[in-house]
Image (cartoon, rainbow, N blue to C red; front, side, top):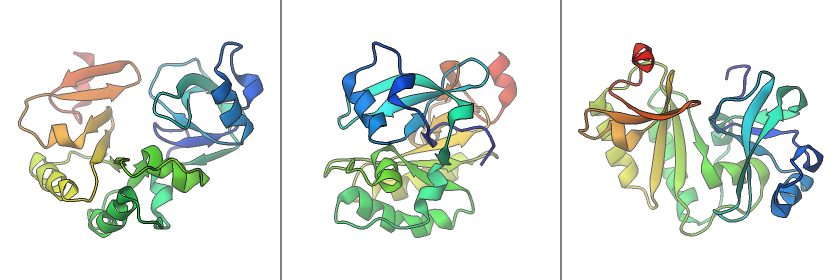
Length: 206
C-alpha cells in the first residue's frame, strides 16, 4: 500500500469530539465505540483525508474529514483476505468460493463494503441479502476480454458481487469495463466522469 490512505481503507483515530457540532448522534456513538472510518474520494485540505462514518443501516453514512496526524491504525482491503470468514451467510460463502480464483490472477485484491467492515471490526454488518464488494488493484491495463471472463465468474457466486477496478486514475466498475460500451464511469477525487480508457491518464486533462 502507499503511505497515504487510499479509498476504501479503514482508519482508526477519529473521535466524537472531532466531529462538527451538527453531526448525527449515531455517528458519535460509532466513534465512541472505537469503530473505524472509511476513506472516500474527495478533495480535501493538505494534511487531511476524506472519510465516512458507517452506521448500522444503509442510510447511516456521514461524510467528514480526518487529520492524517491523528490516524492510529490503517487497514487496507487486501489485508482483510488473510483470514477467511466463517459463517453461513451468502456473502461469506461467495468470498470463500472466489478467493482461490482471485488469488490466481496475480493481482492485489481485497474486500470492501459490509463484509470488509465486519472482518476488520467484528461488528455484525453483513446480512442475508448483503452484496460482496471487492476491489482489484490494476496498475496496468486489464483487457476487456479478461474483465468479461472475470465478471462471468463473479456472476456465478451465491450472492451479488460487485468488483471495482482501482486504476491509476480512479475506480471503475468491473461490470462496466467488461461490457461493450465505449466509455465507462471513472470515480476519482474530483467526481465522476465518462472516460474511454481509465489507464490513459492523459484523458483526464481533456
